[in-house]
Amino acid sequence: MRLSLKRRRALLPYLYLAPGLAWLILFFLIPLANQANVSLQTGNPETGYSFAWHFATYTDAISEYHTQFLRSLLYAGIATVLCLIMAFPLAYFIAYKAGRYKNLLLLLVVLPFFVSYVLRTVSWQLILADDGWVADTLRSVGLLSSDGRLLATTPAVIAGITYNFLPFMALPLYVSLEKIDRRLLEAATDLYASRATAFRKVTLPLAIPGIFAGSLLTFIPASGDFINAALLGTPNQHMIGNVIQSKFLNILDYPTAAALSFLLMSMILIGIFLYARVLGARNLMESAG
Image (cartoon, rainbow, N blue to C red; front, side, top):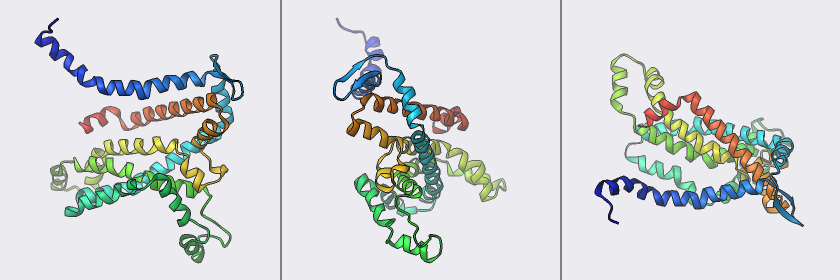
């Protein structure tokens, strides 16, 4: 049966969407449904697991691992704020002051991605080592006691997370700042606004989409990270990602691991919703457009 031109035009957008939808269904929705099934199973590694609508797995996971959940959100939140503090001046300089060196500086921002994530984190073990230059310098100026250490501490884990996810904050900020019409800043100065006022009234509000995107790109993977806590911390700094990794690969407690994953995802989604409400979702969409 031959379709009319109007019918073909109506079906064309769905044809374009089909590959993306097929990819999402195959590699996201189906694994997600499978994990939901696993999280409601009961049993043990010896006898196997069977589906039994076992919702108690969720309540048990919260009561047993709430400390790791809170620690993950705290570490990720602190790292996100630190990334924003460091990335905003960097992105601002690249967007407005770098001139012909802009592409070179952007390359330097993304250059760490050319090295393995694990290798980058291991390098922090050398930087923060007890006999390393950083620790010796801090001891010499009195900021670290003679028996104090940087490695295997909470600051070391947060520093590693901040370093590894800094480009995820810097790049969206740069894109948002680069899109700002410079004539708006010129108009603000023509109306006798100081540079600080122009920044606060013009640049910062227009950069909110970049702040929002960068915060999400930093906070979401940081919340589930386990590499930094494993390599730069101790069990006292373990995050929920370490628990999930251990449950899946070592203990083989698949239902609890799946339940923890869903709980973490739910917390992140709630946090995103509240964050969007605080910044103003409508303003974000209008600014991004």
